Image 1: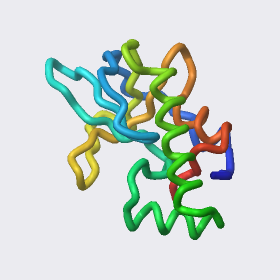
Image 2 (image 1 turned 180 degrees about the vertical axis):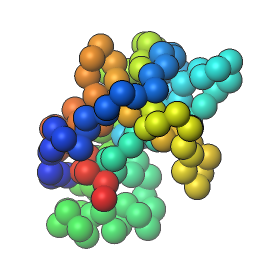
Image 3 (image 1 turned 90 degrees about the vertical axis):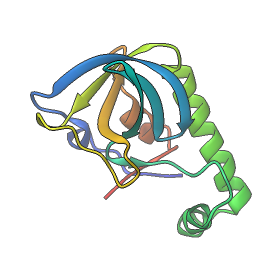
Image 4 (image 1 turned 90 degrees about the horizontal axis):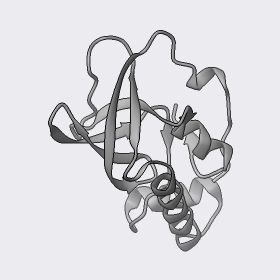
Length: 134
């Protein structure tokens, strides 16, 4: 999935940063962490990675990218695999926008995720495995 990459998009100024541990990778843009003593799902800010199941959204992503659903599904699985290799079982930094925790309509924490100084979302975009979410 070709995406635009912009260093400015992923710059977080004076973030509220907390270190936690990644326990599971759901897909290419969602992970699970131990946060303040409980398991939390985290949605990576500013990107959208292909789905890993055949859904209506995957069909829409495939049409937009000009790919078959199977090719798009393969991209989603590759994005998940890349994130697993980066963060699974490791300490990660959650960089929140501002002081108040944000959640999406599914109850996931919305945050930038860094591991070893690397912004996970920008890494996926640079590999062409996610696109900037507008």
